[in-house]
Image (cartoon, rainbow, N blue to C red; front, side):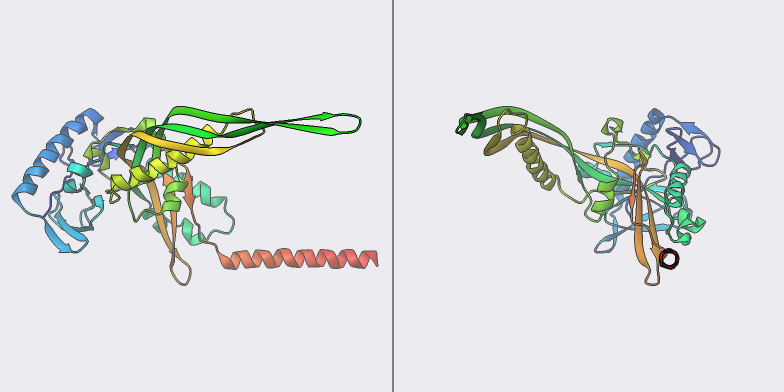
Length: 353
């Protein structure tokens, strides 16, 4: 079996979870609170123990994309897919961090801890959907909120520095009016611009199966809130590891920086028109692998059980998602409005004639 880590309370031995409201680590049994520094010490100790256990026993494969682990609290077997980095035991529900998923090259450079706890996220979610008149009422029930999960998603943040050069032509036109003619004078200039440009925190998702529209929709994150990674931050939440290589991300970031450079090199000029070519050459590219917090809800609604996904930024509370529509209520409302308009027109016509 592969190595797992469960962070335990030094007072009672219960498991610890990160508490977003207090920004500390809390024992759910005795209420003991630990600071980030204390948890980092335990993280280092737990990681060392997990590495030792991993070296002694080979991991067990259960399928092409599945791996099995042992829960340290109850000993049950946990089976996960190949990108899961933190989960819960299916039997005792204790939080489990899968150490070998986030070691070596897959160890994150940083993490933004959750700022919104589950209670706050649920309240904001209910406030959000309560303003939507035609949302399926089943979307409000308690069973749905039980499926509200805090997940750390992997992202690449890339800084690009490079040199840009623009070569082209700019023109300025002026008009003079005489008693017999309108004279337009156009002056053409050769334009050459050079500059060293820096672009910070170009974001790209690092997980193939992540929904791009949803994850992009809850951006941006405040990257000033990034702290050095410690495995304890994952305790109590789900987490995914990256499966998109940094080389792919760097190529996309350079291309995006080039498009920004084109806009910058052709803006803020005094010409009536400017045309030419911009060249951008990257000189230094640095990428950071960061875990970002999100609250996620999946709802299967309708006769066909079509899935609907809702996501909330776990740091800022920004939301994005497709909500299930109660078609019967929508149809009834539309019919009611249609009938009211029809009766109003009939009444108005009778009055006129």
